[in-house]
Length: 352
Ligand code: 5AD
Image (cartoon, rainbow, N blue to C red; front, side):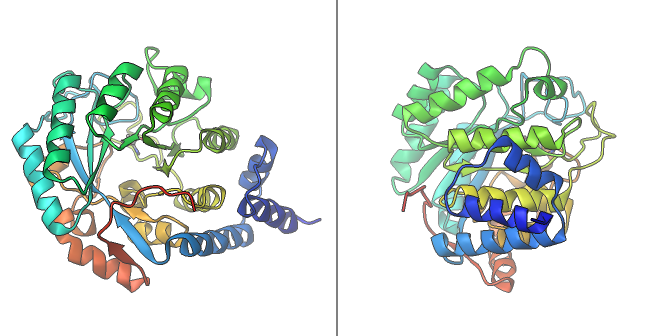
């Protein structure tokens, strides 16, 4: 059997709902070529269309604080970055973002932030309760890092529907290469399992092309997601941020990212998979290409316009045009140009 036939067989198995092994994933990654890519992307696009039509779910992203106690080597919000102008939104500012978002047609609000002690667990719970009371037809997603199971439970009891926490990389040694010693992949994984157990719709994912990453690491990430079965999967290329230790490292590869989106779509047919800002930042038209590779979510920025550039996870992060929630019409036009449309819908995870 030649390489294409073998690759095709694995992609077909994934599409048929079978689990792949580490060796299977590694084979696909090591032998990825134009032909295999085209086959995977085409199958993934059809899979997304069969499950969601040409609908793209939109989430209003509110970056509530860029203060972070962690010191991840890749992230511009790391605590050691003294060039980052720190901000923390007030509850009033956050509620006014929700108000603007609701008017625009958003039915999911994603509250994302660094691990900031200024947002106590109680404050977050109260905020979630307030948003759910004002907008009972909306989903609230939290993305505020690692917390205890009890705290996650209190977020859930306050009405939060979903939680985003990327695992970033599942390999111990690679995790240690990207994070200071006080962070561990074990804790991160434990958080994810806790979130699932509590009943959140859970999102995870990893960086593509982060420094030191090998194809074997990626195969482990795919295997971990196959085991976790998160309802949402966000992946994006690593992009250097000049004020971080990895500021001079090369960005992740777009073609590899698209191939991975396609494999994730095939292995997780009902998952909500965003065309991430990082993909759009890496290449003009990257967002559209991610959608054509099987992504079905976009997360325009609802944060106050004057704060957006301070949420600098990486250099040149897009916050304008189709990335800006207030330019929904522009996004609509961009999606329509490739035959898709944004929908006013919570866009919950549903098993068939
Ligand atoms: N490049 C790409 N993505 C990054 N993130 C953080 N820093 C970077 C970077 N330099 C991603 C992480 C995190 C998410 C909020 O942003 O994966 O989970």
